[in-house]
Length: 180
Image (cartoon, rainbow, N blue to C red; front, side):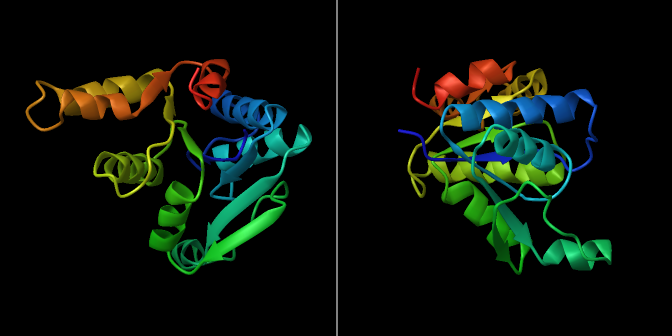
C-alpha cells in the first residue's frame, strides 16, 4: 500500500559525503518499495534522496518555493531528478504541504528548516490536526536532541514521545512505514 513519503534533510551535503550517500540510500529504498518520494526539491540530501529514487525507477516530487530565490538572491532550480514540481510562493506554504500531504515522513540530519519540518509534523500529529502517520527520524542525533527536550517530562508527555521513531539506518526506516 505504498504512497508518498516526504523526506526532510539539509541542503549542504555534497555528492560523496556520508550524509548524501545516506539520503541516496533512503530514496532508493523507498522507490524499490514502491513509494513516491517527495523532497524540498533542491540540493543536498533533498537532491540525494531524489536521485536515489529516480535511479531506482521511482517517481519524485519536488516541493519548492520562490522564497529561497529571494533569500539566495539568485534563481534556484529544482534538482534534475525531480519529475513533478509543486511550487509555493512562501516557505510556510511549502513546509505545511510537505508535512501534511504525504503518507509518511522521514527526517535526516539537517538545519533549521529540517528541525521546523519535524517540529511541525510532531505538533500537528500530537494535537490531532493531522492524522497519525509514520514520523521516522534517521540518525542518532535525533534521539539525543529529543531526549534533551523531554528531560524530566515536565513539558512533553511520555505518550507524545511515542509519536515518532528514531532509527540508525535507512534499512531500519522503510519497514516502519508499513507499521512493521
